[in-house]
Amino acid sequence: MTASAHLADAAWLTRGEVAKLLALLNRDGEEARVVGGAVRDALLGLPVGEIDVATTALPDDVVRRVEAAGWKAAPTGIDHGTVTVVIHNVPFEVTTLRRDVETYGRKAKVVFGRDWSADAQRRDFTINALTAAADGTVYDYVGGLADVAARRVRFIGDPATRIAEDFLRILRFFRFHAWYGKGAPDPAGLHACIAARAGLETLSRERVRMELLKLLLAPHATPALAVMTEAGLLGSVLGGVPLLASYENMVKVEAAAGLPPDALRRLGALNVFVKEDAGRLTERLRLSNAEATRLSALEGWWRLSPESGEQAAHALLYDVGRDSYVDCVLLAWSRSEAGARDQAWRALAALPQRWTAPAFPLKAADIMERGIGAGPALGQAMRRAEQMWIEADFPADRAAIAAIADRAVREAASATRRAGPSGDP
Image 1: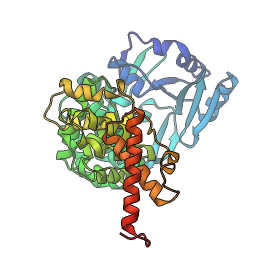
Image 2: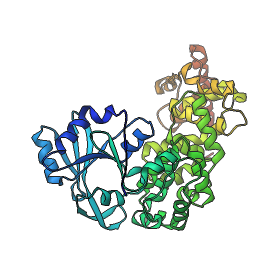
Image 3: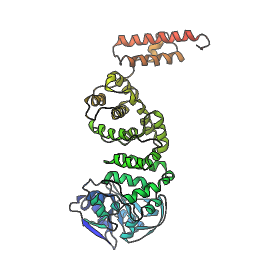
Image 4: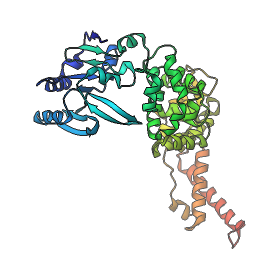
């Protein structure tokens, strides 16, 4: 049974590049509609982001029409009917209606068709299977309109079957519920996710990473993560015990500090307590080098508190840099007894706005002119001088810096004498 509705105000659909694309494909006996997330978000009154289009036209016909119009067509998923169309630097994924005849993970053997209902039936959730025609009419073949109204995330057809087609749908179920759902997750979907949880181990780490980071940014992520924890799913994904209170507090202190939601920072709050935790997450989620470095820097969170004073904060800011310093402050704040409105913590988080870490003022030449030649002793003296400069809270006057250099040279010379000719102490 097909239900329908109408988008009352959809300038994003009736104007601009998407309107031009639909007009191009809606002729010569073919039909095209916007499908999926854009329709769902428009019905929920949310900003419309990426726009995907479904069409009865075959991929080769789509390419021919697009290129004849002077636009760019890239066959990004041509075997599955997907062509990426770029109009004035705006990309659209255009996919021919299809029916999956065999599925295995992300891959599927498909047959192209002209049946809008059959195409809807192969998708994951009812709220993602809605289509909108160029005139704003919304078509629903799977009960998506009712689920949008109820803020309910529900699998299309049998949940176990949908999950068996791609186990990533377990994580997508919780991600979409955290973004668009209300109340408890759909019981049938939750049961199917728990029953199929072993399938998560078959997924690529990159795909798990992508879904988890998107989930962590959702407005209702905490209750979704709590259900995942109770169901034994989240610990399996992370390989460690989730710190839900720290995660929820991180959401609050980010807002209190005036910072946008940050998925990696929230991941650290959820599951990084010591450096080894960062290493485990890097391996399990196949994080990039930059992401791994950022998580590892979080081990310094315990060094910060308003009670320790700004000198300790200066030292950490110098050590890890502005961005990682803010991460550490917010993580320490999220694990303190202070609330999100605490002014002392807020001031600590704002330190980079009023203090910039200076460059270390001493060079190797400054040490060598004091009698230390090239070699291990020079490096030792430089490291000791920098340590003393940090401990003195980064003095800038020449006398203090010279005194630090003199002391570092004396200590290095003393250490060399104690070591003796062999170099052993």
